Amino acid sequence: MSLAIIFAAILSREKIKGQNFFRVVFYIPNILSIVIISAIFSAIYDANNGMLNSILALFRGADAEPVYWLGDQSIVIYSLAGAMIWQAIGYYMVMYMASMASIPESLYESAKLDGCGNLRFIVSILLPLTKSAIGAMSVYTFINAWNMYMWPLLVTNSAQYRTVQIGVSMLYDIDAQALGLMMAGVVIVTVPSLSIFV
Image 1 (cartoon, rainbow, N blue to C red):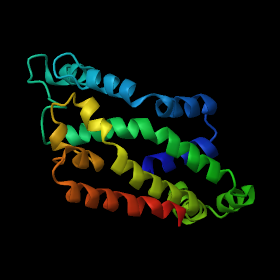
Image 2: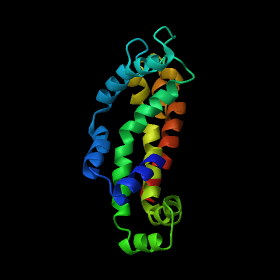
Image 3: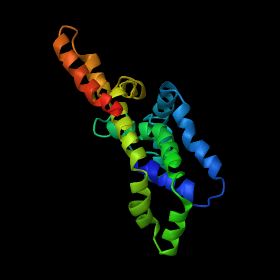
Image 4: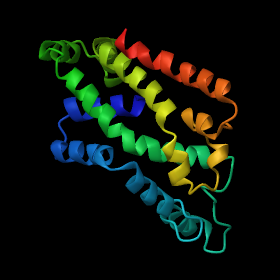
């Protein structure tokens, strides 16, 4: 969410050549299927022929031990988070840009005349005026965090699935006999998710 706010502020306020192109490029991952993105990142993170290890080999040497991005329990969650952020950041950015578009131009001009720096402008003006979008995106993020049970399964190809379980993937693995435990988990997931309608 933080990266999306920064990118939205840059692409909506700064005069950058090819702004519309960058907006499209950032949003494209959001329209791709999770299966396609999982295949892309499985190839990128591949320990033997992956793009990431090939780039690292340029600096570490070809004889260096490859990094097991999806096999090492200490880093697999970060590898998974990288893929999820890449997929979602465009959606959040577009939502924030829509909210920023409603801010009057006079505020931007007044801040510039008063000598307000970029960081001060974001903290004192941009964030307070987009708090409704930030609140909505926070709830959306919470719901998505519970529902992204497919990511660990698809990106890791089941190799480290149980070490990076997210939300309802734990419910999926509960023994069918423990119906009470499963139902309690569903209630825990459902009640906060309904808060978006309150």
